[in-house]
Length: 137
Image (cartoon, rainbow, N blue to C red):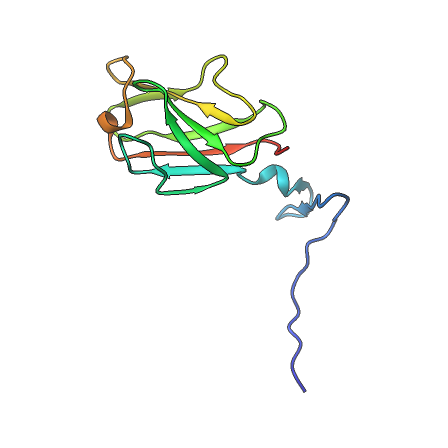
């Protein structure tokens, strides 16, 4: 007789694939979908931003010096998108997006060097990485 492997199961499946996960201590719950990165990108191509690895990213666009834009394969539901970035080492002071830099299908970045000027990844270090959170459409 074959042995049966007992596996813990996710509990709290509500509707439309929404899964709620109980916290480690059991006192709280969290939506699994809300806690996942919906897109990510990493590139070591310092001139054309060709993805080395990615998820839900169709391409990147080089809009200008220090202005790469991540284009998503599947759009977000709205522009309430949060991004976390790494644009190199030592010489990159900040990486942010300004007004109009976020649409449901793309997220534009401004890369600023420690000299307070726009800087491409090629001049700031080893590559560019980002992850994005929000609700997919």
